[in-house]
Image (cartoon, rainbow, N blue to C red; front, side, top):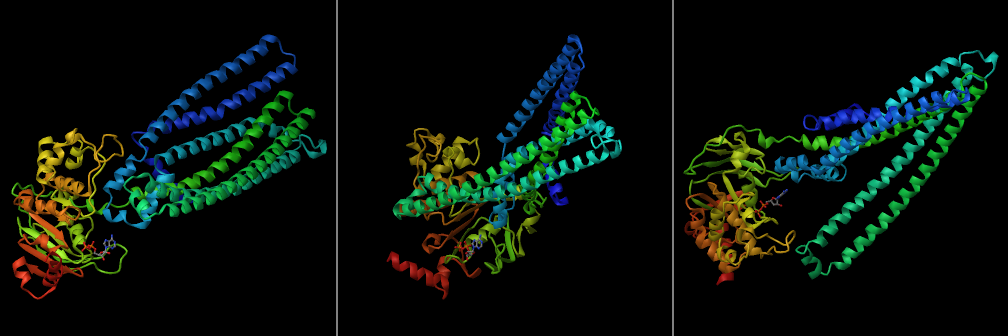
Length: 607
Ligand code: ADP
């Protein structure tokens, strides 16, 4: 394993520090017990055989047997307790699997979420990483520790036998240093061959498993579409069933090939491993038997030494095997550590946001330009504008002119590429991020309502203030509908988890999202195409109630339907990422320019 892989692994294990340190302690104790116990039975069995051979009395033999059985019983009991503790701890860790990961995903800079590399890492972690990786790692470490202690124990037990092989070859090959050296060389060669072939087949199996997981991800994607009743609309109406059937068939074919391949490698692996280890066992017994026949060791020692040498070879093989596993998992640990360590630049600002009841916050865009991460072209260019406190501002323009991006920058979902945005004269990057976020209540055009109770959806919290939530829903035009709901604010939105849940229409969902913004009671209210999913009557309702909804807050209203924005005092016209016109509807209507062009083009549909 490289230095970096070790570093990643220790950094990953470091996340156990504090709350889960006891799992590491139990791991060490468990491994010790698992490694030492087999030697107890090997040594005592040897003694027992020697006792029988040398004609020891029944009392002495019974003493050996009792010591052996008693010792093994005690160690097994201790091992059982350690395993129980260890496994319970691991299970608990599996239960909270993903918690730190999800926390990180929710806190990380928004722009990372669309970074293909970061996204890939997250998927990789979901599949191989997180706390299930931790439990895998701990199991591997357990095996490695057991193997290491076994090697040490075996050397310690067998060492006296090699000391006895000190006579010159001239006195007979058996018991000579030459025989011992040749024997050790052959044994190590066999262990090496076992390790290399094992490694080879392991790599092949891992490669095939990777292939399987690729197809599993594909399958999961399609299953996800087919399992959601909302997502199936397109499947049914566009008659995509054949398309999906073909995809599933293709996945099944690939999976079958991969599974066959994996089975093939596994069988070959098992065959070579078993052949080589049987050959090793055979040679070990021949060597120990020869030593006994030459009178260098006792019959009982044949049992002790042969079993210990075999434990040694097994342990060396398993050390190599699990080191391989550790190496492979260290890559996932690297992904996990890199993901968890992604910088949270948005959280670097420390200045608290001034608390003002009058909501008089001034915002200014100062020579702001922006391009999306990884993109060459600017979406916004040299924007200079100041928001008038407490006024209703509209942003209009064709699709793709940069209206939503402008809002994303204002809310710090992204940071500007050039220039700066100022709040009360200070660069917004210097403010405490979560305090800054509290200033904005936004309804994005791709808003989401979730399968939580209605009240929680509106309050964005598990404890909703019922009065405030009802008032917000009323002001968003959902009051009447809410009164028809048997469980009121406790009604679950959607039927994903609750039989009694209610499927709301697109327009109703949009009103719920608007109610959420009203509930937040932030000094800035931003509506990005807030009426796109509403019927004309509801649209009128929202416009008519807009004053009531936003009160004297600073509000920004985005739409490509100019008629929607007529009531705003200050209209910005975006084109190609620039503000090309600014004024009231009355002023812009009479100016030559994009606004009049768009207005006239849209007006003909209403004439
Ligand atoms: P509007 O709201 O005016 O319709 P947007 O601000 O959504 O426009 O988009 C402006 C431009 O930025 C479009 O050309 C769009 O393709 C591009 N864009 C939007 N989001 C991203 C993104 N996440 N990554 C790269 N380009 C984007």
